[in-house]
Length: 180
Image (cartoon, rainbow, N blue to C red; front, side, top):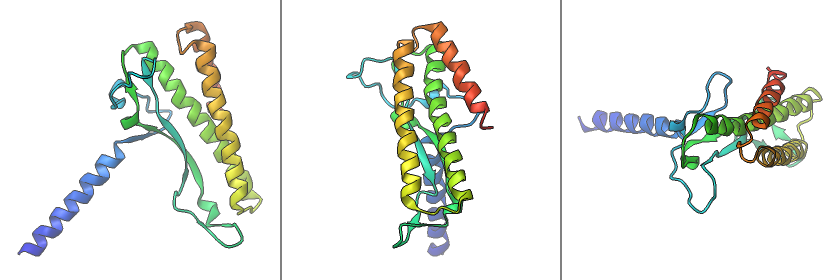
């Protein structure tokens, strides 16, 4: 009798573990906007900010195999997503407009995920499986993403300049729509 019971406990633990891990990231979607409840980390008082959005542009699958010739095995399956990390994102003082500003940081990451995915698709169309080709695309566009994020914060004074922030929202939204 102990074997079935142990087996069921293991299944339940695996289910719970997967469920908990799934809740630590939010994959970008046009239909799912961030809420303050997504910001689960404690505020970092060493950073002079009201909120921090933690994101990553990820290449999937994340366990790719590269052969001796520097070619990615099954390169046709590569895709790219933008993920928000709930356990590393925080808010010090909530406001509806600040949430729009933080959402746009995530949207900018999504825009660059689309750009990387698009470049990957072109490489795939060329039957290019070379690992370095994909890495170079990712690194170039990741650097552009970071520059855009910095420029966005500088130009809007971290969202305090409402009209400029609104024009950024419009601009990034239009660019994302170009990929849909």
